[in-house]
Length: 412
Image 1 (cartoon, rainbow, N blue to C red):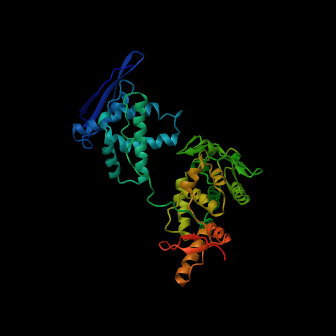
Image 2 (cartoon, rainbow, N blue to C red; image 1 turned 90 degrees about the horizontal axis):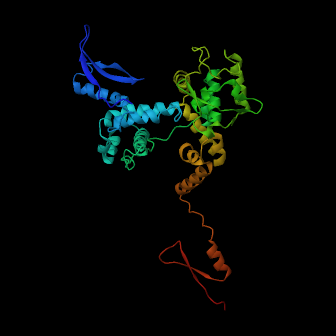
């Protein structure tokens, strides 16, 4: 194994253009030492040596990740990337998301800090200062905590300073959902392909990564279900989000009819072709869902007069959960249809209470208040009924009108 090296940072002149900063180091492979170099930037981008040193800190940590015990956060992050952010441990989407938080937020702020210098309150104040949504700040906090837990597992440190960092993940606003009327209005404005996509997403609650990964072979018109076997994120195919996500999902006859109407005119209708292929990529890749949303679905929403709502692919999943509750579906059924790992996710995150019973009860109370009517006398309690059966006299309690006391008496 190579020994720890700082490398060398040099400022080199060029015949044309400004000077550049170059970082040089060496690799050892098979007993042979090989010198390598990498351009860090120009002196216009990094005018001072200190600026270039900061730019190279993360890269220096990467080349030394296997050499010594990490001393700084950047070195620990490099070791974490090497051992935890691997395809055998994490899905591609997870690796990409965590890497972005590390690269854009954690390493720039804390990379040159010694592990022992990271303090709970400093991290908490920093997170609160970020102009980001609470959910994003919470994710950054969780990634940072995972990195320090990685160090604890290797017994490099004995305390995770992020454990007691307080960071709320409360939403700034509730997610928007489409009512049945709005959904029907949207369908009327969509071309056949996008209509099939929206009907499938809204009736099954499929995530967009699951939706675009489907092939015609996954659709079973006999059993009237779709078999979800994989997902596709940024053109990369992998497993579904959870084991529960791999369960088949029922299809309504109207959805099957729409899908097969689209299949008849699709240029790629064979069993192994994608349901929604990219014509530009000759059917070898599925369409990019965000582009469909931006170019087709959101303009259709405006034409349908649906404004003031933030609509994305996940909106159809939220809408399904909410409408399931509105129809009186029990929690376990909703969990199975949405393929959540547990019912708490279904209840706390996705459903929004739209109860006809609650609305009717509230309307009756308001109408009574506006009309000045007296409230009907409440039904007597079991205690009062029992007392009456025994021949007791009901006497109103002087200090609490809603309470009673029982005074028994002897009949003449």
